[in-house]
Image 1 (cartoon, rainbow, N blue to C red):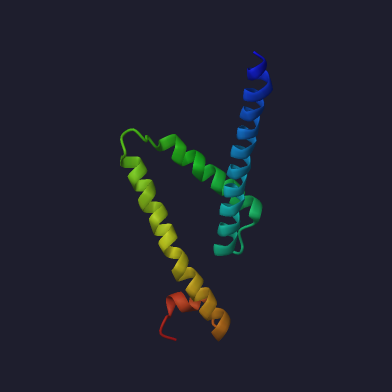
Image 2 (image 1 turned 30 degrees about the horizontal axis):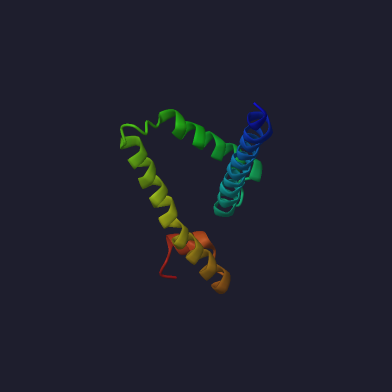
Length: 109
């Protein structure tokens, strides 16, 4: 009994604190990423959008069948593939002084 109250329960509390802190870091990281992609989007709206997105995916996904998980992986792959394109256009626009939207619409300018 002493082992349970003295060792196991404090370890459980520390594990829960670690889980909460990593989830908070992921939530804020996603909100900051959305803020960088869409500069007009406030940070609090990015947090709400990320939280809603995660809850929506958790509500509609069924990991036992595999198909919703596969579609989620494809969506994440597309978003990760977009990052080099967006960062390259931002860097080129900073060097040349052309707006990012103009570079995506008129890449030959």
